[in-house]
Image 1 (cartoon, rainbow, N blue to C red):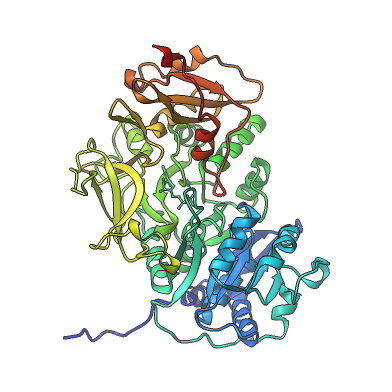
Image 2 (cartoon, rainbow, N blue to C red):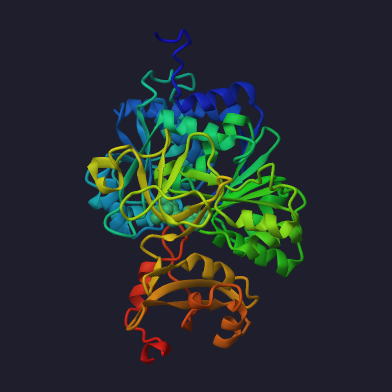
Length: 544
Ligand code: ADP
């Protein structure tokens, strides 16, 4: 017997309709590529998104077609997303930080039919355009005045593209399981793989993460979406904010401390979200200029582990709550969020901090388990660690074109490639990525834990720990460090600092000082490149 409730498909563009109807005056603020700060509202945005939909349809874009964007976070980028999804086409975010050849591979693999781009990337687009086999037209996200003089087929300025399109254009009707968005993983191993979100998964994911004990975004918030829309859906913010009617602020192309601070201040931002490297820049800027963050209530930090020292600085010095989050492109992307549960919230701060350093607990809609090498489930005791597997309505069940089948098992679990513990309260802790774990004498050493401690040293700007070949132990940890400008520290200083904070056999065998660490296109330390660089490194302990 079926229920007698309405079949109201969960379609992404309904979110914008909702915002336009019930939160019409709520602002959308953008630092534009041209420089000035632009202000609009959900009420003004919705008809412009419908114009995009109409303009795309007139160009022959139809249900299931992929339309690429190569763009910073902005109101035009957001309108483009909603316009694309409103006709059942698929927005495909390209990450401009990838190598041009990788972008070409991804755009061709996805069969992108059109490309919307910020003028910042004009040279890049001109360079790759001859290799983009299926792109029929290019839309520069600007007005006619700023249209670059570029040799691109069928190039048009965004404002001209939508100028005479219908602001009352009717969204198309289709099933909620229709593909909606596409984002490729950065492909640290092998070729990038496409994660294909559906309307249903995007809507459910936004509802899941907006909950009070997850992100807790509300209509009263002003949220600065620093995390790029090309990095796993901007962690749902472009859906979540209009869903609850929060003001949304976009940083455009500028992520430096001064620019981020300016928006936090002038737009009275209460919540924000980004990877730890962005916050390192902001914290440094605040310290140098003796500034405070009076409006900001919370900051969502994820993408890589958030160091304890960063959580402490935000919370103790600036009174800003840190929500540590974990997720991945395949999970839409949020999997766990580290808000404090009822039996932790009143603990002494140091004990609470232990929980804040964990990656958090799962909202409804994310199932997690850890397994051993034989795929047997391990206990949720906070000690046993194994490969983390996940299941849920906003988690991938396969990759575009059938790539990467090994990650999915017959019971519908997706293998995250992360190694983790689960504790009895439901908090998950990532100990490593399976491929980064250091295998010493048959035991595993968590590179993440050592890194997080090392960046707590006052002279350390960034740190990475990798396994280096050792004749007796297989691998031993090497700590690779970038020092803060003008600061000094010796190998012994750093090892003394770590001593007593981690098990003796986890202590790095050596410390290497470098000017900078390699980063991936999503701002993470690229361990594979580091391992290559130190491939023939001889540890001082190797002769023992
Ligand atoms: P990529 O950067 O490889 O394209 P994602 O952005 O999807 O992929 O990254 C997902 C991975 O990032 C996770 O599997 C995990 O290893 C790592 N990660 C994300 N958040 C955290 C966190 N809070 N702590 C530790 N690792 C994290």
